[in-house]
Image (spheres, rainbow, N blue to C red):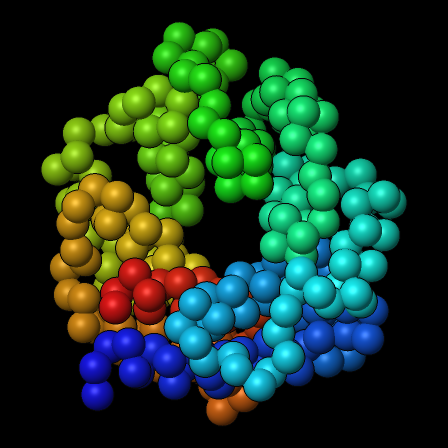
Amino acid sequence: MCGDEKLQDILTAAAAFVLSRRKDTGGFGATPRLPATIQDTYHALQVLDLAQRYNVTAGMGLAPATDVHLRSYLDRCRRSLTPGAATTFHMLWCCRVAGLAVDGVAVEAMVTGRMGDADALDDWYYWARILVEVLERKPALFPDDHRLAAVLDRAWRGVDEAWMHMYLHRLLRNSLPQAAPKLIAWFRASQNGDGGFGFFPGTTSFVENCHYGLQALKILGAEPADPEKARRFVTSCQTASGGFGRGLRAAPFLDATWHAVAALELLN
């Protein structure tokens, strides 16, 4: 079976799992009994968006832009929440997918102002993603900005932070945090014997680490040390429900399912 066909089967099961987490309110929750959250809705819509691109959701009734319950849920959230950078990105991304109008001028002004106060790596990362993925605008370069330097000059602790460093360096400094061969070697060393990626070399494999590591290696024009083992590790995390756990024998959740299918697409 070719890669596309296998991924289509995996996405068909994953989409069914995601839809089982949909609430009558229009959002998605972590389990059938928990209420909807913006984060879970974001991960659900990412999985469904990928499934639609692979043409495996025909007949499932998936149309976020015309889903009145989803649009109503998101509209209520954006009027009532006072979230940080990550939740703001998740909410605005969902609004864009659902076809809700976003005031680009106001959002850009808000993001620029919040960047001026940000001193955490993930805050800079998610504010930048709003500009790129929601507003589809390339932010100005910040090559000598002391605020950004204070964030990017810190050492990273795992593949997620290493990916964020790479993303921000390329976007805002037009550079890499280290020489490409050194980065490639570090990410490859984070792959374990079971095929998955740890937080850093020698640590336990989880699907979110696979996603971050594979994203970084793709940007660097490189493959993991063992692509086939990576694929086997991720697919082995899929449960009978169709969703993915973050590790072997772990319970399935929406965030792990998104990281897993995104990793498999990168490996495809």
